[in-house]
Image 1 (cartoon, rainbow, N blue to C red):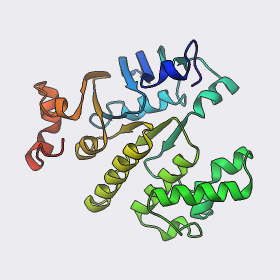
Image 2 (image 1 turned 135 degrees about the vertical axis):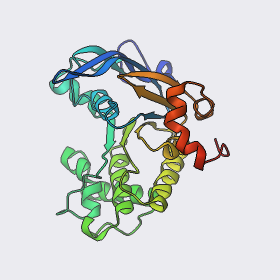
Image 3 (image 1 turned 30 degrees about the vertical axis):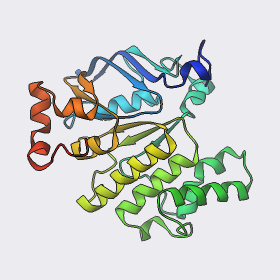
Image 4 (image 1 turned 120 degrees about the vertical axis):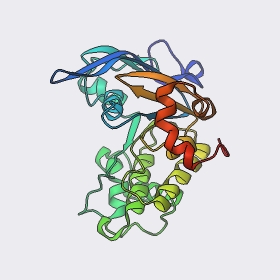
Length: 264
């Protein structure tokens, strides 16, 4: 692993991302208010909270798309904050992001979308790129779909193509921004199952931003809730389910009425 004073053995099962006292204002609105968070390597962490709580803002800070007003972010021990140019790009290459709207290019085929990042890097031959594309599409259950266009796919299939594209870059960390938003319950369930399967198979560090508690409980090892710009509670799904924090209880009350504790 790349880091300051850290080698692969020291970072193994250590901290992949650490956020320290992060502050961010937008037009006088104090969105992140001294937020602290640690994400363990090889685990799946769900960041939950109501709309406008700052979940997606935090995600953009983690990958260096947005700069904080104050505070620090470390990726495998190397500080991201303040990095620019090639130094920033070196850290960003360790990430891949699955966007809320999939963000596929409609003029490209499924295969071209999945292999886009690899093609732009120009490090691999055409055959090598094609092999990786086929492998990643198989992982998400889309074998043989390379020649189709995004317009021919369902919403759930587009999400899976977005996941395959992220996997194609072989990142250390995968970020999911509201992966089940806009999907019907059946499709959402399939995406949750896929994410859980990939987590168990690949053991990638995964960060899932969601307001869907069903998805959070099914796909994560750890849940952290943002409220008023800070992480107010975090723990395993079991600990989160049993929380006596009134804000947590209110947030998951609807899920509890319709769900059960089985499978947590």
